[in-house]
Length: 318
Image 1 (cartoon, rainbow, N blue to C red):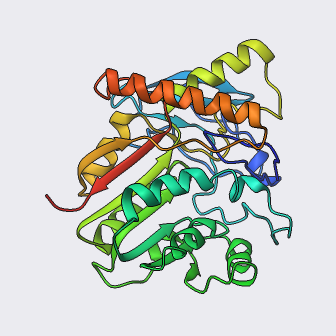
Image 2: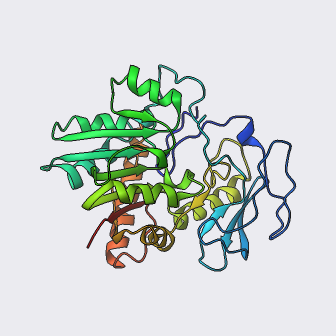
């Protein structure tokens, strides 16, 4: 596991299979595929369009932008139901990114959306379960989680004592319609190759008046940082650029809004929560200062200029 802390993406664990590179850099052409790779046409992952341009090249993987809907997506042919992010077993010493560094961001969410209320919450793609555990501390919320990785679910059960986390594909989670007041996705939606079945399932699981909350990288800032890193440092394996091998989608405010609206959600709103907190005090202070400046810029521009990660609130019903 990568032990660096990131305020825009989580660290990734790569298997040999996910290191295979897909694209030969040519638009609308057949890809040169290594043995064992999946074949996938170069269709926009959001609208299905075939016309696109290369906006970034991460090693041998093209990042493409659809010329129709403007969505940005990876050309890498990854497994749409990849369950080996955590490997076969989670180490006892878990990277503090997954609990300590994210705690202030989680607390912002609890204060803004859950405090002084009660209900039921489902965390989709809940990983090791630290957010579910955080919600459970309120005492007024029933917190559930769904995770595709068996190793992560075992950790949540055995190390965190969380019985309300189940293992399997997100779209297959079994609850009655209208079971939840809040459904959350923390850095998950960008990893889902075909998000419509998952979001459609969530829309059904929410009660009227419930909310679906998503945190995902904002392509506006992500692409800018990737280009600067490439310009200043070249391509290095230890630097996160667009994380093209497992981030299928790079959403903007406009494209995430379109995705949610076509799955029946209304009143799409963008909020700002504190970034992940670096354990180094000086770096942490700098990040929080940048966060305040980015948030102020969004407010001054009426929400049109948003360089923060996308913290999205989508409602069910009017």
